[in-house]
Amino acid sequence: MRCNAVFGREADLGGALAIDLMRFRKRLFVDQFGWNLSVAGDCERDQFDNHHAIYCALFCDDVLAGMFRLVRTDNPYLSRVVFPNLAQLGSYPVRLDVWEVSRFGVMHPNLRIASAANHALMIYFALRLDVRALVGVTDVRYERALRHLGINTRRYGHPATVGIDHAGNPIQAVAGEILLSQQSNAKIQYFIDLAERMDIQDASHVFGYQRVSA
Image (tube, rainbow, N blue to C red; front, side, top):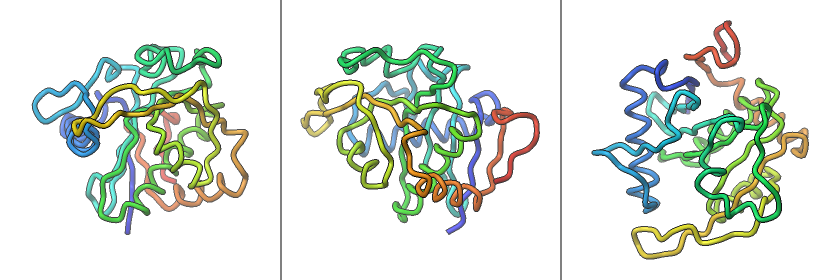
C-alpha cells in the first residue's frame, strides 16, 4: 500500500481538501464513534479550527485514510480550554515547544498500516520542529492502544467521564502527553523509517521554505 501526506493550515490546503478533512472527521468521530460534536451539514468543526491549526492529511492509495490537527500550546487549545478538569496532577503546558494533537484518527480497510503511517507522521512532525512533547485528551482505549504500539505516555490526571456517545455509553477520557525524550530509540527509528517511505508535501512551509519529501 502506497501512502503520502500533506501538512498545512486550512487556508493553504485548498478548499476541497479542507472540506474533505471536516467530512472525514464527521464520519469518523460523530457517525462511527458517536461523539457529541458540533456538526454543520456533513462537516465537523470547532472553535480550534482557526489560523493557528495545522492539519495532516494521510492518503493511502490516493484515498483519504487518516488525519490529525496540531495546535501549539502557547495558543488556546482544546485540551486546556474544554477539559481543564482532566489536569488534576498539574497544569496544562503553555510552551512554544509543546503542541497539542487532536482529531487524530484513521478510517481505512487496512487499518493497521494506515494507523502506523498516521503515527509516523505525528512523530515526524515532532522531530522536524524539535517538539518537546505532544499533548492531548483521548479516550482511555486509545491510551492503551498507544502503549501497545510502544509509545510511552504520561498522564496529567485521572480518567473521567466527559460525555455520552450516541449509544448511551459513557466516554472515559484522560489528558496527558507523549514526551519525545521518553520514547525508545528503536521506536523512534521505526517511525522515521515509515515516514521516509512517504512523499510528504508541506503546503504551509511548516518545516521551512524547502519542499519536504521524506
